[in-house]
Length: 175
Length: 145
Image 1 (spheres, helix red, strand yellow):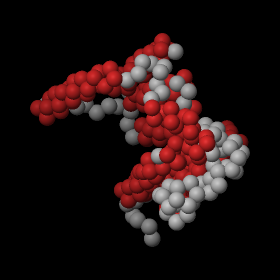
Image 2 (tube, each protein chain N blue to C red):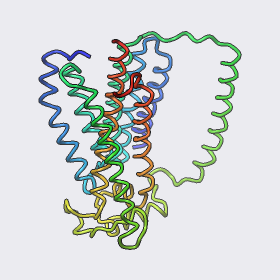
Image 3 (cartoon, chains in turn brown, yellow):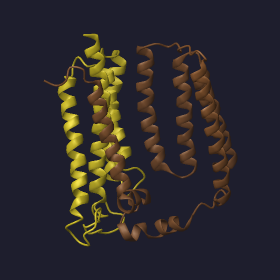
C-alpha cells in the first residue's frame, strides 16, 4: 500500500514539474490532468470513494474547460523576464517553503503512524454516526449533521463563485 | 459556438441521459452509498455540459437558460438554508437540528432531513456549475459579435 502510494505520488510530482516546464500549453494542461487523476486513485486506495467520485467529475469538467481555453487562445507560453521584482518574489517563495517544511516536519512527528489513523474524534464519528443520524454513509452523516456549518459554507462559496463569474463576465448586462 | 460532428452528437445523445440519471441516483442515495449532493450535482452539470458542447449554442437559447440556472441555484440554496433554520423552531431548537424522524437505518426514506439537504445542495451545485459554464460561453459569443 505504502509502495503504491509512493509510486503514485512520484507520478504526481513528475506531472506537476512537467506542467510547469512544458513549452506547449496543451501538454501542460494534460500533465496537470495526471496529477488530478492520480489523486483519484490515491483516494480509492485509501478507501474514500466519496472524494474519488467528486474528484473525477470535477477534474474532468475543469480539464475540458482548460483544454477549450487553450485551443481557443494560444498554445505558446509567455516569456517572462527575470528582473528585480521577480527575484524578490522567488526569494520570498523560497523562505515560505522552508518555513512550511519546518512546521510540517514538526507536525508529522506528532501524528499516528501510517495505517493507524483513528484519532479520538474519528472513533466517535465511526461508532455513533449510524445510530445518531440514521445515515449509513458516514461521510454524509458528518457533512450534513455533525459539521453542517462546513457544508453550508461550501455551498455558499460555490454560490458566490457563480455570482462573481456572472458579474465579471457579463459585458452588456441583462435587458 | 458550433456543434461537433455527427458521431459526437449521436454519442452525446445516447450518453447524456444516462449520466443525468446516474447523477440523480448518486444524489438521492447520498445517505446510503458513497456520493452525495456535491458528487451528484457535478455529474448532472457534466451531462448538461456534454450536451451543450456536442450540439453547440445555435439550437439552444443560452441566455434564457442562464437566467433559469441562476434562479434555480439561488432558490435551492435558499431552501437548504431554510431547512437548517427550521431546526430553530422544531425539537431541541438548534441550528442544523435533524428534526424529522430518522426511520429505519438503511432504507431510502430515512435519516431525517439529510436526504433533503443532499437533494437541494445537489441542485445548487449543478446549477452553479452550469451557470459558470454558460457565462463563459456567452462571454465569448458577445466578444465575437
